[in-house]
Amino acid sequence: MSRNQTNKDASTSTRRAIIDLLKQQGGMDVVALSSKFSLSGMAIRQHLNALKEEGLVTYEEEARPMGRPTKLWRLTPEANRFFPSGYSELSVSLIHSMKEAFGNEGLDKLLAVRNKNMQEQYLQHLGDASGVREKLEKLADIRTNEGYMAEIKDQDDGSLLFIEKHCPICEAAATCTGLCKNELHLFATILGDNVHIERVEYILAGGRNCVYRVREGEQAH
Image (tube, rainbow, N blue to C red; front, side, top):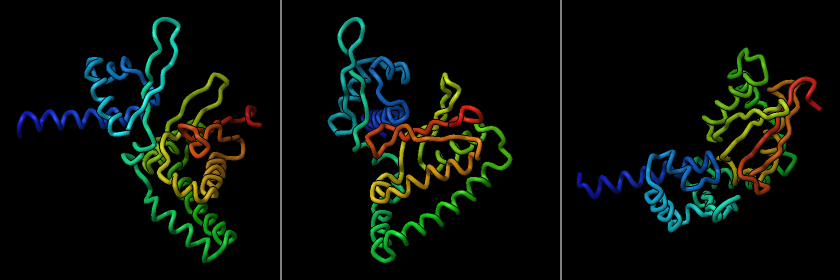
């Protein structure tokens, strides 16, 4: 393999890694990216500019207490093609066909069957998990394997955030909002009666992630 080809492959690998990191972390500046990849600021800027030319990243300027504003780099919607799509075109086509064949009521019944099957699968995976954190950790594993890039974050008020950074069924969910409604009901069911869960950020409403706030016991309301 020629040196030029080796360099090209390395650049492609680094740029894909930058895309993955920005998907996970959201807006990042050159300094933060440089520290993650052990590359100079100039090298990171070259990769970002190349990605920007491809329409995969953009930036917004964030004011800082001292000095000039800093560029925070983010992914554009075009970058979603690098992440699982959940056969979006087929899913959307099937949803339209089901509506035409069975009407909205029939589609709701089909979604209820899907939700019941998912509930059984998730409960089986959760096994004997007891606390809400343990359940959420196992749920995050399930959802990450399904392409949702899920994680949990502790909050100062004692609640937990369940964060999904990617939606592999986004186009289907935009066509059929019942998918998202059923997911919230699914999470609430498997977490149990003593747990309150609410969606506080929503990709289809313009959010960067789908985020659920979870409270247990006396905190639930």
